[in-house]
Image (cartoon, rainbow, N blue to C red; front, side, top):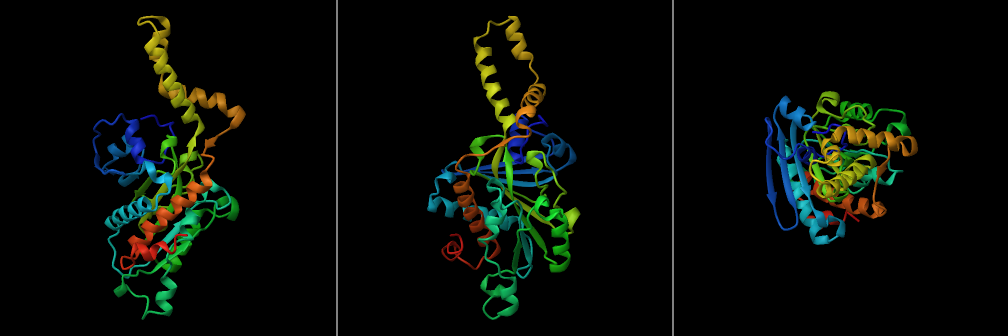
Length: 324
């Protein structure tokens, strides 16, 4: 695997290995008309090294038409997402869950977390004030949430904020929502990743912060994310690969030019592109021009799935009133 390629997605890390069988990595894929659900389990250190990801369980929902804002498709994706989250949550019905919306609400591609939090059904305070109406017998779970901002706004590492909150609130689970980086523009706002490994904010764009994991904050962390940006050097690298493929097919076999194309090392090529681009644009990431609309649509989808997963007694019709 090319360790220079920036991606937060386990499914893309798997693709970068060539799709071959890897020791310590199990993959299960389920396809339907509208989506593909991939479940990747990294079982040991060898698998983690090969994938470039921590050991754990990664679920990816790929929905190419999610950008089209089809209400029926949004409902279907939310329900499938809810089932995958439920399979990861093994907690009593009265367990408190803390949802954290990571990201900077002032930067559109990074505002997914706060936008999801604003659409959640928050019940922890209601269950304390009105236990006769809001209780686990009605399929409602105590849920609280926070969008803590980013280090540049608060001057405090996000993981430190969350750790202090966990010590005070004492949730049994933390769910962290974050915008991710992908290596392919096709996955922007069409791919949802759910992982039980926690999250390292900013890692996909080269700004890795202190991790939000069970080891750092003391409770299990489920990370949910959607790609909103792509590394510009990765895009340029892919474009160059396509050009090289065309040139290779046209070059005369055995010629010096043919051998030069064949001998180009992928890692070296990527580093060269970075060196060429850095003096002019620095660490550039790219996002679609319609990202405002895409973020809003994605936030509704994620919030719908989370609300269904955390409050099994509430129907999607009831949930949808919170998603506007």
